[in-house]
Image (tube, rainbow, N blue to C red; front, top):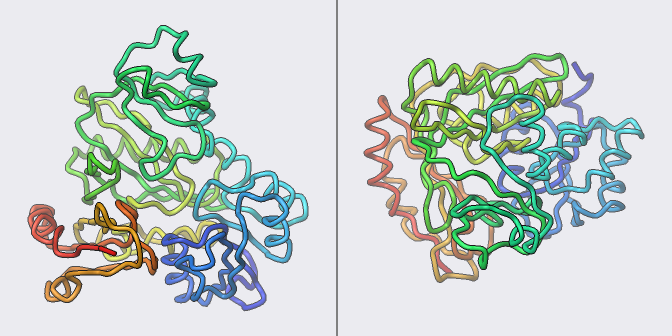
Length: 378
């Protein structure tokens, strides 16, 4: 356990200052933990509420090195960071969780897939390509799933490729298109002492136009056997990575009943937001516990829940205006979380709503009733 972790002198630096950092700060305040944030956006959601805020590029070597050298510990809220600077900070004696070696694997989706293959972690078959021309000269059959190796996020850089003309130009991978019955997520955490804990399963439903999660439900409607198998796979992944921190493991449940790892994210994740209201310990509190080598909290589900992402309205770009919030607040067991983003644009994540209830059936019914109340326009 780290000494003086909640004193003002103990500085935790966070690369990225978006909504994940904002919710991390809200948990940090409860334990008097001091978070110092860095982001290239001077109006980032954390800018006005962190212990200190540095405006700078998290992908620039010198900027990250300068930011981190007076910190006791560095963590991330997004994996697209300068890993070489984090490696240098480790050499200087700064603790970095998740470790740079882990971020290096996960940041590149091709390296990520090779890790699964080399460590017998179930995942779909794949092939790596340097560019569009290499794909043209291959024997790939379509349709197939195509992903940029780096830089993709929130539905960007991921597509079902139906013909060669629509291919990405840069380095990418082609995956077998999986005919799955459900998309699941397991959040797993591990501290430096080796303690591991998993959250109850989550079932995701996507907005087909935005390719973003529209709903998530917890617990997922799956058998105990599938639940336990999913948790074991997530545990296996974080152990084989030798990772410290919080890891979201996204899985496909095939129609044959098999589980395949789709992607992983080494940080708090969209599929864990409901844990704030639904679990004994939220994913954000668990992340802090893990990186500080504190005892991991109980992940027991207090009540079933649903989460709805609040996305910027299609056709609207500019200063954000939230319509329907007053009406939403008339509903009980409904918890809005706004991310403090001043500007909206189509399908941008602007907030989320958590809905709780006695049964999953009740929660799903209410989620459908509530999903269109709030509209985010310019």
